[in-house]
Structure formats: C-alpha cells, structure tokens
Image (tube, rainbow over all chains, first blue to last red; front, side, top):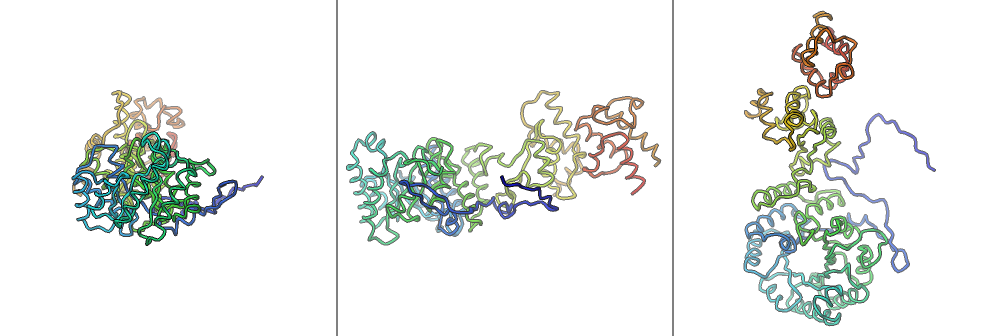
Length: 460
Length: 82
C-alpha cells in the first residue's frame, strides 16, 4: 500500500489550474480511454476535444417546441438573436433547426434571416418524404434534417415497412436532396435501440457511397438520435446502448468524419447532459441541444449546459457571452411567462442561492467556498442567500450586505444585523411561519433597524 | 474607565439582555453553559456591548469571547490598552 504523508503547507492549494474561478471548472484528461470492441481493445484520446471543432447545434424551435405551447414568432426571433450573441462570432452555437410546415414557421425563418447574423445557421427538419422536401427548396435552405428511423420498433411497428422498404424510402429522399443541392442530415431515430449491424451500418455505408464524390459541404451528415434516452456513457457498455462503440464504428467502419456526426439525446433516464458530453469526448463534433432542455417528454441536452461543458473542455470562452444566458432566463420568465425550476443549474432562481447558515458563513468568508465559479462576472448572477430559520445570522449578514451593496471593510458584521435575525427567528418560533422570508420583508427590516444604511442605498 | 466600571457595565448589560438579576451573574460564568445564551443571543450580547461602550468591534475577535471575564478583559483591553 502506498503511504501518504500530510503536507502541512503554509498557503492553501486551491488547485487553480482546474478551478480558475474566472471560468467554470476545467475538464482535463491525463491519458487515453480504452474500450473493448469485438474482443479487441480500441483507444480514444479525449484530449483531442481541445483541437477538434466541437460545437453546439440547437433544436429549441423544433424538438423544444414539441414539448410546450408554441412560441410566438417574435419570441423565436428574440431567442434566436440572443442565441447568436451567446454562441459568439466563432459559431460555438453553429446551427438552429426549424419546422417548415406552417406559415408562422416560414415567416419566423424569414425574420431570423433578416437579423443577418452569421451564427446560428438556419436548417430545416422534415419527414422522409419527397412532398416535405418541396418546403426546404422553397425556403432556400442549404441543409435539412430528415427523419430516418433506425430501429425495428419504428420500421416495423410505426411505419409498417420492411427494412429494405425503409432504406429505399430514405435513400430516395436523400437523393432528391442532393439533386436539389441541399445537404441531407439523416436523423437516425431510435438508434440506441436499433439493430446496428443489421440495419444502421449498412444504411450509413450506403449513404456514404451516395455522397463520396460530393464536395465536403454536400456530404451526408448523421444525427444519432437517442430517442428514448437509452444511450450509455459507461466504458464497455454493450451495444446498441454504448455511445463510445456507436461513434467508433461510425467513424472507423462507416467512414463518417467527426464533423458530420451529431448527437441528439433525451433525458428519460437523467443521462441527457453527460451522454451529450460523452459523445463529444468519444469523437463527434456536434451536440444537439435545446434552451433550458425543453424537449419531448423529459427533454433534450440543455443548451446552456452544453455551453458550460464546451468552456470546461476547451479551457476558454472562444467568444461565448454567458451573460446572455441570464438575459434568456429573464425573457422566459417575464415575456414568455414560463417559469424555470428554481434549482435548475446555471439558470434557476436558486442555482447559486444558499439557505444553509453554515454555507452562508462560508460565502461571507470566501465566496469561492460555496460558489461554483464567478457567477457575478460570467452570468451576472451574484451568489445569494435565501433567509429561513436555517440560514443563521451569517445568512442575514450576507443578504443585508449584498442588498446594501457593501464591499470589503464596509460590510456589516453579524452584530449589526442581529436585530433582523431576531425578527426572522421570531417569525418561525413565535409566529409559526413555514415559508421563506421574502426580499421585501427583509428590505423593510433593513429600513427599520439600519435606517442610515438604507437611506445611503436609496441615495445611490 | 477602570476595570471595575467595565465589569459592572458588562454584567449589567448581560443581565438586561438575558433578563436576569445582575447579582446572579459572576465573572466566572460562561455565557453559553452557565447563562444559557444560544448563538444568536451571544451575538446580541456583543451587539449590546458595542452599544454600551459605543464601540465597533472586530467580529471574529468578539465572537471568540466565551465568558463574562473574557468580555471584561476584551473591552478593558480595547478601551484602556489600545
């Protein structure tokens, strides 16, 4: 057994190379990952995400809209514009897909185009039939996704087809796309429950042969749709659920380059974000997401989570403006009227709010103890405390100092806020209160017990 | 201010805050164990001492004070020796 000796250092080791605080914590790897495929060991080097052109694609207005009341045109245009600023000029958020079926869908695309932003590029989504394809041509889109269901659940029980009939239909629509100069993106629906060697790989290889003589910007793209959230990130999980094996075979046995592979997940088993990140790490470039994870049933990979993962993997912002995430939250809550779960990471009202007195004490002493990164600078969201009978005098002091905008030596001690804390405790111990103290109530207490500070804040 | 004056004011303030008779409070008493002051009451006591002596004290130093004698020494040091 290796023996470890205590290193009683004079200065703390905050491991800032991984936890820089000015960025989300970085994800770094120390070596390759090994996977057993067909009895042989294959190697993945996760460090190549730092050089590969990994990026985010968006389906907020397609899959994201299938799970909620439709957005109004002006709402989609506003969110699209914000998405463009969030992803930045380097196209970290590279594409966004839209329905094409209604006049409102098509008017929205026109309005988004009128913004004249470089990214996200607008793509379409259609079923795999030639009639739908007319819409893509009419809208003048360069790329469209098309539904090409991959599992026998869909082929046999939904489409009432044989595998050959399904493949022939899909190939026909892809050929029509190529003839019209539109790049096809085949959405392999339910791929994590499909017979991979019996249908998926032969289909993909046939697609590859179809476009092998096409210029790079016309080669077929493959979207891996984990329709029911069955995909697994674990090393050496069995096929067809294994994400590593699926990506390896598509790249090495079917010849699909990483820039033509995309992951589209669902959250039925709470795996949606990590499965998306796994797909990036194991060798595909595009991660398909929706804003705040809204999507069919349990949702899709949250766009804002993917943005954080991108920064953590790349080690930098690459033009991303995270403050726009908070703008989007405000827009959702105040304009669209959709309230996000308070504990939802990065965006919920309470994502960096503590109610525990001991955590509030830590925050007062050194913010980094209980704040995940500099949320004030990056997200425009300072860490907050919500006051209950459990938040302690430290919590009240933190709230009051934040409210009064006091910094450093100006900050009030717990003694100065003791009267407010006594009032808080009386609410619970004497009045039998069961809810949190509201910001308005605390403000009133500041006004009563610390009038000189309250007036100074008002004057500011 | 003499040490005795400081001691009298610490004991009277403690008695007022804890709603006790001053004669029942001794210098050897611990605020928590002997006089029953919980963490919030201990903070309120320090706040009351600040008002009594018209001083602002450093939070971390003040909250280390555990006993009546400790409070007397703390304020005697602040008032007479700094």
